[in-house]
Amino acid sequence: MRIVLLGAPGAGKGTQAKKLIEKYKIPQISTGDLLRAAVAQGTPLGKEAKSYMDKGELVPDKVVLGMVEERLKQPDCQKGFILDGFPRNTAQADALDKMLVSINMPLELALSIDVPFGDLMKRLTGRRTCKSCGQMYNIYFSPSGKEGACDKCSGELYQRDDDKEATIEKRLKVYESQTAPLIDYYGKKGILVRVPGTGSIDDIFGKVTAALGKVA
Ligand code: AP5
Ligand code: MG
Image 1: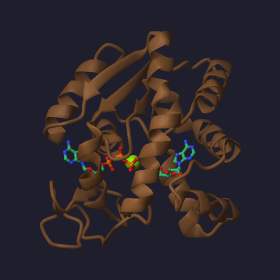
Image 2: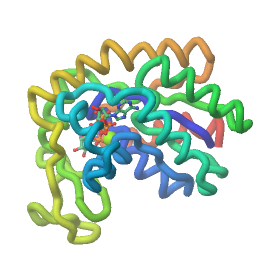
Image 3: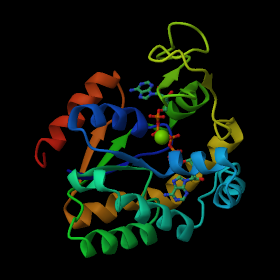
Image 4: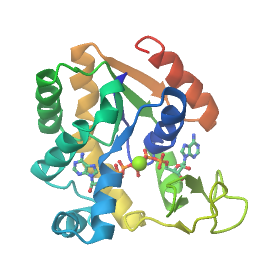
């Protein structure tokens, strides 16, 4: 199964991807997670990326494309993959298309998780993530049992640097102008499915897996 998850910041791409990994045993490739790991390690790529991420802007295409190409070459991607947060604009989508066609693994589905813009701010300001295992929580909607600690591994929970109101507003604008056009892009290719991203995480997952049932 080779899929792209589309959706605004806070739509639940990462949340649904984590459940898909468990069910289908295929890796999630989140460019945001890869970039945050590079930032945490203080690599030159991470330092360059951080200046864009802190402003809520997209990191230059060439940086992200190189990272994705490397990741797709790993053996675990042979069985399939879930791209999360990539592609982010039509130039990245065109480049991905070429990459996948050249390795004879074309994309099968683009799944858009649709959430009204008004719901996203609270999801993002309330998000907390485990430093150790990456599990996501939300202080308003799905808090951990013990404040500041992960239910799964007891790791420390942190708030992302770009989950501040002003940065979130910029990210939402960037999504609207640069990423939302991909809905039409994949619609025209005939591989788009849209799923409402409101309601419980499990209900949404049911709709996601129903959509994926066609390609699984
Ligand atoms: P990235 O990490 O991709 O962030 P994003 O797209 O802004 O998306 P998020 O991770 O914020 O949201 P999500 O949809 O994963 O939601 P989540 O599941 O966590 O990118 C960050 C930055 O990196 C970019 O701004 C850019 O600078 C750079 N970057 C990344 N990729 C790039 C690329 N390809 N090109 C260039 N630059 C790139 O859920 C959010 C919260 O809501 C959580 O608290 C969760 O618990 C909660 N929640 C989930 N589902 C529900 C529900 N049904 N009801 C209530 N709450 C829910
Ligand atoms: Mg995410």
